[in-house]
Amino acid sequence: MDSSRHLAYDQSADTGPAVVCLPMFSMSRTATAAAFRPALAGTRLREIYLDLPGHGDTPAHCPPTSQAVLDSVCAWLDHHVDAPVLLAGGSYGAYLAAGIARQRPELVAGLLLVCPGVTIARDNRTLPDDPPLDAPTGWLDAAPTALHAHLDAALGHRTPTVVATVLAALNSGGPGDPTFHQQLQGGPDYALPDETAGVVFNGPVSVITGRQDRIVGYADQFHALRHYPRGTYTVIDAAGHYLPYEQPALLRSLTQDWLHRTPG
Image (cartoon, rainbow, N blue to C red; front, side, top):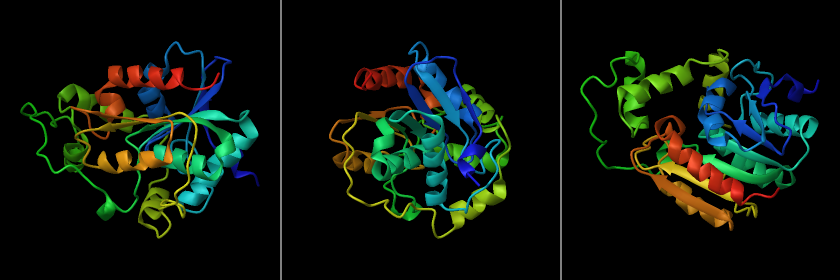
């Protein structure tokens, strides 16, 4: 059975070169569109928003390993688009996009990596130790109590409006498969086997990070630039792990710069 055919996706009506956007962990293609569509508006690219296995409306049709998830995405790309394509992703989606560029560089024309995971093992990440920015009283009141600690660590732009935007994204799209998420995140093969490989990708890359991102940080991403000879790196103040929802205007400006450096 070709598991690539079971990945749910949405695309724009444009017929230009394709940009395939991969979601953050446990989030849907609908949330990814809310993050990247404003940044890509007016570009005439064929925007494709993909659900990963066990995410959104896509069933968990592969083993709960990051390599199996990456292989499913590559199989989908092989069957549905003319390579090479532009790849964009946030967090885990950016981690996978970087992995695809290492393992299947012929599929990738350029990378847009937003708050990318670099090291899956949490204890090995370099995280900011600065105190969080000030926030108005009650800024987290609209969020479920179970999410308070996560959002407190994740957000740099700490306002009720940003919280509402992030909650809407978290709750959008298909429900996904929580059991698959737990098995993937808690399993021995959450890290890609070539996570630390010194493979160089020569296409245009933009790495965009949040200065207050206490989920994946910003320092490891800077050191990863040695793999990207045509890479640019930006760290944005008053932004955390949900940067596309916290600083959409800056993301759009940086995305446009990246597109100006891409082929076609």
